Image: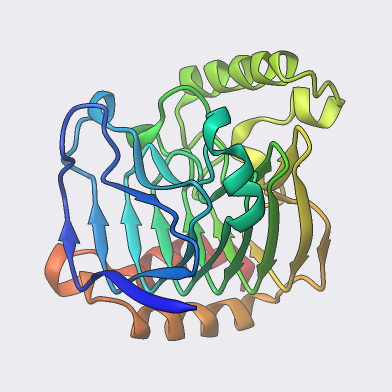
Length: 268
């Protein structure tokens, strides 16, 4: 397998055009693409202009490591809904996301659609934040035959109404509509608000394994979860993770350790 570093040590704070992905990557058989050590800062990109930050199409074999994603409405779509790519995504779509942070992003943190993916040592904070909410919210999701494995991941939120009260109502309605459209009428899929969907599967998707993950709120649901991580282990993981990542404290005036500590003060 030939490994190709596609993007490294970049600061991305814009999109090619209105409604376009920041990165759309098409698979090539026999090649593994690597995206590493980047900051994707969408705080100043209008929500109405955004689509995915990163999109994998057509059977991408990829690795995303040591990246930070901020305020994207849709962070990572790994696989594609178009029929022309179905077979390639099912056969070759295989990706790993490790040592990454998604901060105040709306949904798809990350979404496996017809692809197989693994998330390791990732931190997802305030998914569904009102600044990145568009139609509904969720975090890690296996969908339409996609498969997800998670190990040592951390999910935190500051508030149940992180999307805002009105957006929470809109979110619940849109999740019900989506479940009806896809004929996945389990009550858990119909009635679970997006703010609760830390790790879920629907419409033929599967959470193969979720192990040693941490949540700071009781409503954060992780499907098929085993051996939950304790708070102090989560804090060590976050300190180690921040040390590996691009320095956004000096570049963007964001103190990640302080964000984690404030979110988990009642967990000590």
